[in-house]
Image (tube, rainbow, N blue to C red):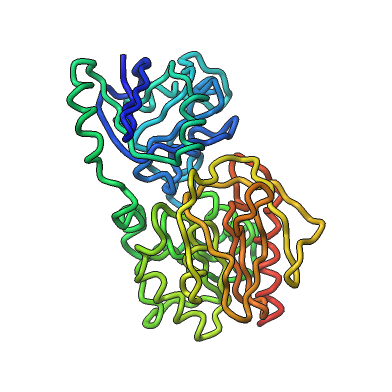
Length: 376
């Protein structure tokens, strides 16, 4: 048995799986039907207990942890599991998929990640939607529930720290595209600020012939010796306002007119760098079915794309002169992208590289590369 205790004192009892250990964190939910290995290894979930609303989790197992020719994960979004725990209605230890090498349970045991199943995830999700995400604790021993229930109010909010510093690389790493595919050399070179970069973003750039200089979140761009054509701002966890060092580097890039493209947290960081603001959403957007409407010249167009998302913070629609809202969420109207009138600086809140997930927004990588060619 295992127990989930929410910060307001609500208790959910279920069955324990994965590692037999207690943990705490911010309890959030994801509405995707597939993609649990990718979600669990997504650095943007750092510090969170992830609830899956889809009723069956684990039925297609977990693929190999093998690395690709570039030295990073071949199948996952990072080399580690970043969620503190997962919650699901039904966990399957019987799995079937041609890439699977272990069950979800075995994988979680190996990495020391606990899970709880058998609870009413619909009731939990409804509560989080109505009251907002909250802190919680998973307890393995029923005899400790009462003591933990009184202590749960003292759980530290992971968003109060700089989670980006925990998931970023510590030194610059350069990835070159496959020479066999691009015999004439890279089509462009970018500096990618690693704020918790998903590996499929790296794969997306490399397969398009881009050299990627992956740098730490606080990398000194002003004194960089790297050769590059543009700047990329990655996804990542937590409150964007904690990344002051990254924001200062973005300001420098804007002053120098360096083309810049951001995704997810990168969208929020770009907004803060131009003098905009960010705020925390009530329960965030986490799933693979978020509709986003494209805007042009201050008006919505007839284009709506389905996107994959994972964020708890959003950008205010009050932007400085010369900047426009690019995309909005069709469900709640929140800002899902911004861009400068020059076309050199732009970002989106959703994930164009989504894996697995909708591919509607995948074209944005190509559009950015096309804009670089026009500017060169």
